[in-house]
Length: 326
Image (cartoon, rainbow, N blue to C red; front, side, top):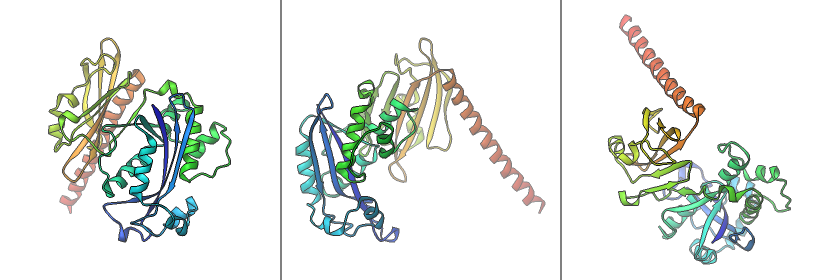
């Protein structure tokens, strides 16, 4: 299998939000990629400028960061033609590697806009090298930009950042230098396209934590009546655990829980709600084994939320008393 280390540059509406398009926020103007083999050895490169069809004038920020010119863009090829060439260059057996999750999201948004919908694999697995870098050298949560990661690893290079091929080159260098093999199982799952029916729901086990992505849902009742999302199971043995703290929410967007497996200890749960439109949503559920400190943080989070709600109720009550007195 080959690794396609990809980077994109994109333009946005140069006229501001007053003329914003709802069908396309960012238009890709350059694709750059480096192909590595299964041993992370360099194989080939891909680079192509794309002639914009929607935002034909460069946004001043895009020009400032990338140093593109309008004349340079006019010489580019159309997105459909470049996309066909790029996918053919990728081959039959590959996985994308990107710095962060946004490139794949925008790639698929542009593919959908130009009539190339649902061509890539579903579910779409990829490597978020920004996340893996953090797991290698930091706390797994901090997100460095690519320039900072290159400086941290003392990678030499005379290529300018913020051009697609240059950034793909540096991302590949970071991938080669860090202990990628140790975190090779830590694949990410792109959710630009979410499961539409129960049979398409995604479940992946990473050893110390499990991830499940739901179908489209219409109510929180539907969510918590589904045992696959309501139950708290050990991420190591996959058995139901004793529930210490049932699902609770901070604002309806994220839910937390805590359980305890007899054999493997504490298990913390998190459900993130991702809105599809005004009425429907899908969720990403993560169950992860944790220690006493991790369990304590869940307890503290629940107590903090309760205290904030109590204070809010008291403020409302105080206002009502003042109004009655007046």
